[in-house]
Structure formats: structure tokens, C-alpha cells
Amino acid sequence: MKISYIVNVDLNDKQARAVQVYSNALMFHKYLKDDFSCVCIGKDNNIFKNIWVNNIKIESSKTRKLLFHIQSIKYILETDVVYSRNLSILWLASLFGKKIVWEMHDGISGANLKFFNKLFKKLKIVAISDGLNKYLINEYNFNKDNILIAHDGVFLENYDELRKTDKSILRKDLNLLENRTIVMHTGSLYKGRGAELFEVIIKNFPELYFVQVGGNTENIIAWKEYYREYNNILFIGHQNNDNLIKYQMSADLLFLPMTKNSPIWWCTSPMKVFEYMATSIPILGSNVGSVGEVISKRNSIIFNPEDEQTIIGGVKYFLANKEEAEKLANHALEDIENKYRWDLRVENIIRFIKK
Image 1 (cartoon, helix red, strand yellow):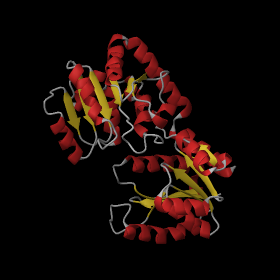
Image 2 (tube, rainbow, N blue to C red):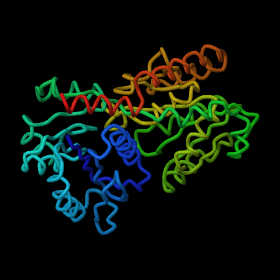
Image 3 (cartoon, rainbow, N blue to C red):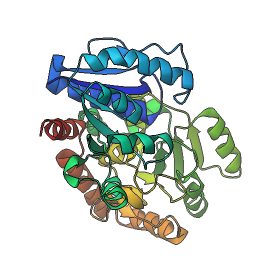
Image 4 (cartoon, rainbow, N blue to C red):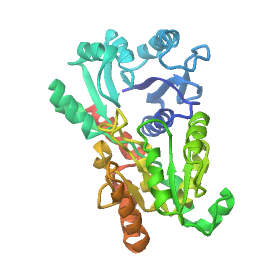
């Protein structure tokens, strides 16, 4: 059985979706070898087949979509199963009688709803959260036997070596303050990601040093201006994966401020949740929506993003109970080892497809 992962994503992009596709593709290839290929944008080797889209960066561009779909036909004809995040690709594959599997990351609307209705009886769905699983069953009466819940994951081995490295060495290498307790958030700064909640920590705990890693230039400039009166917050731009892990491992407390202002709060499976857990560093997190399927009082210090007193209480708990916080962090690492690794995820997906 040959599987082709066909997706309109540029793997040279810095966005999380590109990292997610790349990570899964590596594991598919590990298990399926020559019976797998990833058809995408921006790579060309034995795993990745590069589709030419005239250097159009915007995924929603009609021209890019047209070029991508036309060229995809060749790869659809050469495979048995088409796996994709794009329902339009799966509709095209269905015209050629191929088995189709949709990796679902959000609710269904617009053109996707039309494709979904056409493919309803043919689809198998890999949902990245139980929130999406329940949505499919409750809203569309979709057959639960054709749904697999598969949260995102992490390559744990990328963290194992750094776990042996002293924080002071990492901080020196990254030019971070060595004598301060560092609270860190890594990830984007756009709406719904909770950057406004940084203030609760930097205002009420001036002795702590808050480090934000990631975000585009425009958002960093805007948030620097927002926090201009504080001298205990540092903004650092986007980092490659190796450096990002170093930053995460250099922190004392990792901050996860998911809020309901994000349109996908109820169904998302942010990769930074699993990255945080893999560090074995304590997490202060809001477990709203589908994030609550992964982090809990078993593995994190939990707060309510709509009540800043719970954030203050969470920080105070961490500062006063370092050993208990470390136990939570170790439970998070256990959860990664047992449930949230990319290899385990892809193994489950392959079994689901073959079933």
C-alpha cells in the first residue's frame, strides 16, 4: 500500500504547520520507506516531492491552488492512499477512486463544507483533538469508527542531550541573565495567544525575568511598545528549532497562556504544549478547550486565563514549591514518552489507515 501525503504547505515556511507536516512526513517515511512520499512545496528529495507554484507565498492564492492541484494529479495516480490537510485535494483523489484520509485541524466552513458533504461517506479522519472528534459526531453524526484522535507530538530525542546540560551554560550561550529566575513563553504573538497576560507576571513579580521567544517583526515591535514601561521582559525573534529548544531548556518556568480569544481554542493542539512537556521544566498553563486534553493538574500548574489572580497564585505556588513543581514536570515528560511522540502518532495513523 502506497501513501502520499499531499498538502499545500511550504516546508521552508517558519509557521507551525510546516514543522508539523515535516515531522509527520519523516515518521511516515521511517515506517513505509519507498511506499511513502510527501508532495508539498519547498523540498525535493526521496521523501519530499516539490510542486512548483511560481514562488507564491500565500496559501489561499487561487493561482497557487490551481497550480498545486493540477500538478498533484500525477502523484495521486501513482498512489493508493491520499493523506492530506486539504479537502479539495481529497475530493480530486476521490475522482480517481483513491482511498482518502483527512487530517483535520479546525471546524468545517466555506468551501470545505461543500467538499466535506461530497466526501462524507468516503472519508477517514485523523482529528488532532477530542474536541474535533466530538464536533464531528455531534454536529454531523459522523461515524466514530472512521475517526482517529491523534494529538500532535515532539521528537523527544532532541531534548534528551540538552537535559544533561546545566542551565548556566545554556544561558551563557544564549546571552541570557544567569542570576534571575526566568519565566518564558515561546511561540507566536498574534491574537488569542495570550501575550496580554505576560503583564500579570512582570507587573506583580518584578524580581522575575520574562523572556518571549518568537513572533514576526511587526508583532514584536507592537508588544515591545505595549510593555515599554517594564524592564524585566525581553523579546527575541523567531529561532530555528535547535535554538528554540535551547531557549526552552534554559527557562525556570514555561508559560502557556491560551485564551478563548483564539478562534480555535476549543480544538487546537499547539505543538509548543508538547515541546514544553518534553523539557521536563515546570509549566504554568491555561488548560482551556482541547489543551485541557493534554495538560492538567497532574503535569502542570493550571490557571484560568480569565482570572489573573489564578496566574499570580500559580507563580507563587511555583516559587514556594519547587520540588512539587519538578514532580509535575516529570509527569509531563512521562506523558510525552508514553503518548505524545511523533513516531507513536504516525504508527497509530498507519494502523488506522490500514484497518
